[in-house]
Amino acid sequence: MMTRRLSRRRYVVGTGAALTTGLLAGCSGGGDGGDGNGGDGSAGEPADDVPSEIDDYLTENEARLYEGTIADYTGEDEVVVDVGAGEVGFAFDPAAIRISSSTTVVWEWTGEGGAHNVASAEGSESDFESGDAVAEEGTTFEQSFDDTGIQLYYCTPHQSNGMHGAIEVVE
Image (cartoon, rainbow, N blue to C red):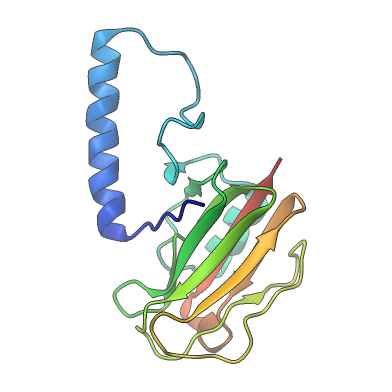
């Protein structure tokens, strides 16, 4: 089982490395013409093909750390989303993820931004909730998503502060 974390710092470093590698690969020829999601270590790479339902939800709710892309974790068994991310601790990181069906999402509390929870929003394919808001760093909540579709969620105490996230579950 592989756990991947994506912090803003790792995203910036990884994006720079990916761009450099892409430029070098483009100069050297070869390449398989694939989309970069075929088990080549590109898990979590941002993609701009965000489903409109996710983009609308995150944009309308001014979701923190959402920049119009979705982190692609298809093929992973488990994905970690930080709870209490960002400068003031009112964000999920990454805000939008794409996973394969039967993947487990683990929300892990950073200890920043006060007490948080995870609650499914109206329009989600499943109903899930972590329970009462807690502030303790290292707290986790796990949910496996077996059915394809869109999962929208938020933090109840910080919903009005833009603490929203979304998941696209694909085959």
